[in-house]
Image (cartoon, rainbow over all chains, first blue to last red; front, side):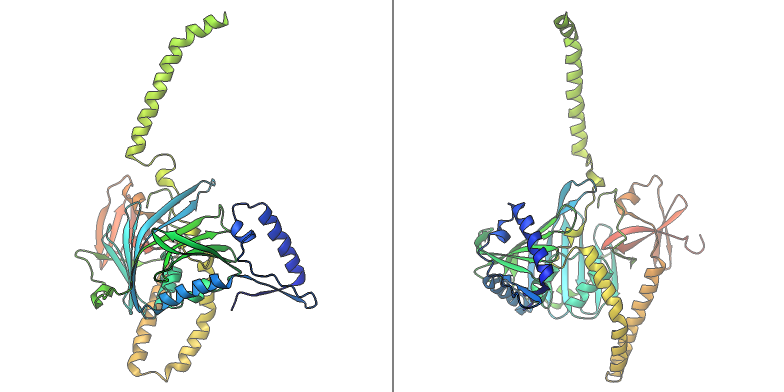
Length: 284
Length: 167
């Protein structure tokens, strides 16, 4: 497992100092400071390396049960409500969000739909050969060849085309790897009911990112996720509430085929670079 | 003396107070009709909109993009080595995909510095745009500037392009 970090003694000492300082000044974060989930901190004085272990095995087991369940679904449809903070240049924190759905058919087909709270909606389709994007408001679509599995297409759509596919870590071919990779601490917060669905709350820390997942007792599927971006200005959060999981949608091939809507105009995918952002100063 | 002064000012104070209330009511009405304050000008996406546990979208995307570049040569090498193992049809298909991808990349970099405006900004341009169709591409001309609709960063935006041939 990747839940053990090896660092040298000096680095560990400074890490402990930083951690103590942070904990004493952060009463709102008791889960990490006082949690019984912190199993053990073992130090090997004689060696040049120190092993820090703050992994609660039950939390890891809950996460694994959930990711194994999602990974085993050959086809599913999930609908969710999402929200995220955007820290404004003057520090004010505002929330935006959308209603989304994701239909996945492994190994290479997917359809993502979204409707932003502002009203704007759209679709992204992976048919196994191409990626299609559609904007009903402008009645335009674009496509580009992208054969490959869902991970490859998600990577291409988000990194190269600049699309946002929230919680795509859960739709990946290997959600366990995405969620457990680089985890430094794991905590089990115990029973927690979300939207009437009893489950368990588990929390994890990765470099720069804290996240919490609520996993339903009945089906081992996630009911909610909250992600905090610790190194970004204002420590903005993202949350998603999974409203419905349909694990046997029984959709036909047409569900993953892009039919060009009547009168829709074909446009191109243009430049995207992370450093270039869409002009602000106008509503989306 | 002081009290007298204040008493004399009461009517004026009342008038200004009423005016203030009326003004704020008016402002509230406008606020209902149209986003006020920061409103439409607010920044609407940021690191948290990615919803990924692999970090904020910008750094993450940059890392992955550079990884992609680093791996590109390895992959091309592998691809070449594997080429003989693959069937003729598959090879041709792959070549086509790669050609299309390369064309798109060239296009992408050529247009990299293109200016663009959001659809809302386009709609609020002072002039009425004329629509010109050249080939399969629709251009919008407005005050001597030509625009084309493209997907950029997951959004449909209007990029400033050079005048299409013949214009």
